[in-house]
Length: 89
Image (tube, rainbow, N blue to C red; front, side, top):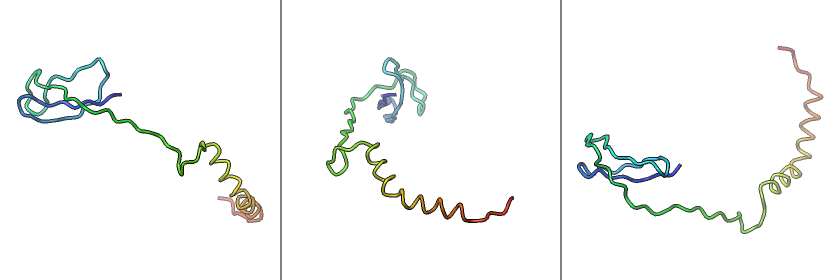
């Protein structure tokens, strides 16, 4: 949902409001003036996604790499868990 900045023409309070693109925010909650809120111009915020360390890798590749690195450790922990006697609760 887009966010918009509004300023009251009476009390000059600036607020940030989240609402749909076709909606409008008109009444000031601070001074309770009707139809006093004016939408301010804002600069769009764009996140430019760049791969970490300039590598072209996706999450699945990174996940598989960590699984392979830790597979031996996980197998050891699994075997230790099988050897341990646990008391019933």
